[in-house]
Length: 246
Image 1 (tube, helix red, strand yellow):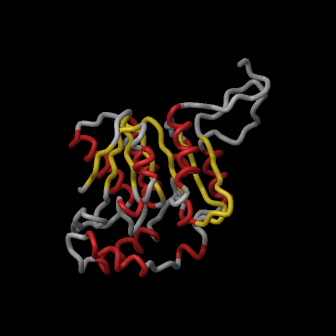
Image 2: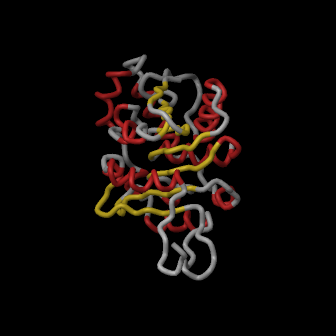
Image 3: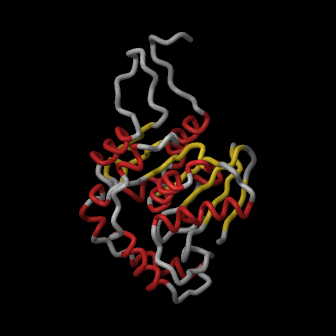
């Protein structure tokens, strides 16, 4: 598994989306590295990480993250994942909760029914040219496509597992993302969010952020806005209501 380490501070693992790699995550990695020790990973068959004779599934990806942490001596870390990386991060928090402090998940779903219909039919041929630039096997793209199409059709029904999570989760979604807005709200409610503030009860440790006029691929390009959501969440900073003591 290929990875890069940058920055200083509390450990933060960054997980890319399907057909992506560390460079295509853009400026959010160096931005986060200003205040965190960032461990950016490349998943099975992506970037410079070789493919192996194994399906790509969310449990496999989650266990790979856990194995990576053991290999580099990380006992616990925050996690930021985008798209496939967000779903892998969610499954990681389900399967290895003792290894996760907080999870920021951008463009995520916990059930296959949460994906937009158009997303289920998408075949990502535009990524083929970029794949060759970094891949250990430049001819491996068709096999990666086969595995990732299978991943998109993998049964996902994690509602009960999500409801049992103790890990705080920041859900980030575009208002025109590949997961529906209704699904993101349902995920937030499963995590204990969506209640009324200012009524004497503490806010949920999980949060929901919706980026306006934002498609799926535009989520990761809005570095400043993403960072403005992620950094306060990881630091535990909560906006003060007018009824709270200063």
